[in-house]
Image (cartoon, rainbow, N blue to C red):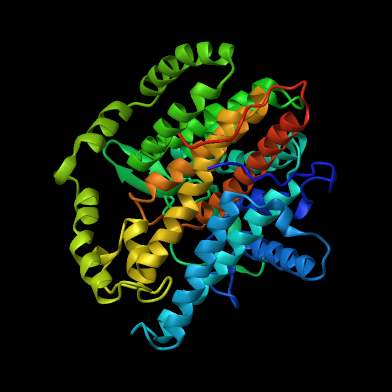
Length: 454
């Protein structure tokens, strides 16, 4: 794959990311998604409503010719459009009565999926088109990590006190009501794992791992604020990941480490070789029961019911996909009568509800932006841009891999954080493309050639 030859004009739109986008991304991580406007229903959480507003403003400004989205083409945006198209086709198939699942509940579930897709598209598109420079990226990332800090602090309070500070939230969010029963606490082994502001400890584990490389980038390169506070947030994300006692979270933590370290500056690489083992030892000493619980969780195998539930999903999924292989039963329409029939694997769930076409689109949606970010990181000039692109790649690869371990897109914080990284990956990709084009046009600079996968 190679970067396109169309130049990317960094000089256009110097104001940077709009405050609307910053507030939206802060709310994605700081405001629990189960607090919804009752008249709207499950899609009425504050983060999703704001994200839908972003998409609406982007669409209107495009139709009015206030900006040209064609100038911001990148692989991740094509993947977003592919998933949107696959969702629309499966949605139309459902409402035409061709899927066999066109019930009132099924249509309502499909509506919720489509609203989530448009909300995700709004975040992805606006992020790419408003982040033109490294200063723009840093300004937006500060808000994202501020939301992440709120989530981690809530999780720390939950873990240490067994009290949920979010219990008082319904009284503060006038007009909003709780939708369902959030899983703030769940016991596992000798520990009580927590969810922070997310819906489930697994989601918190994955989200904290996805944010970790970005927090490291900010700690190394942010010229505002206190460096010590930036590194405290890095530690909080690692601690929050550990407090979830989640296999998916641990997998994400390993991926974040493996992808990020090669792109660190030389001094930071040396420090990481010391701090990682020391930090791991400190966690095990400071949290009694952590070693035994993690060991038992990681080695339980077929004796762990959470693993057998996942493996038992495959025969059922195969039968359902065989019945409707192309378009599935309709996006979001799998509403099993028994809890054991829930698919704890997003790829199986999408294969059932959107068919093989939807499955391919989801794989592209998660993997293509990550691979594009990795290609950009390998070809970027300057440590700051190189590490930013690598952070986006790490987060995208985490999302791609752990989606095989839980039904990831059913969790709104994850589902709205992924498009942010898609948009930021696209912005990084375009900045690297601009560097390469400048190198080609300036004979005094070294031409780094075309970007390739690998």
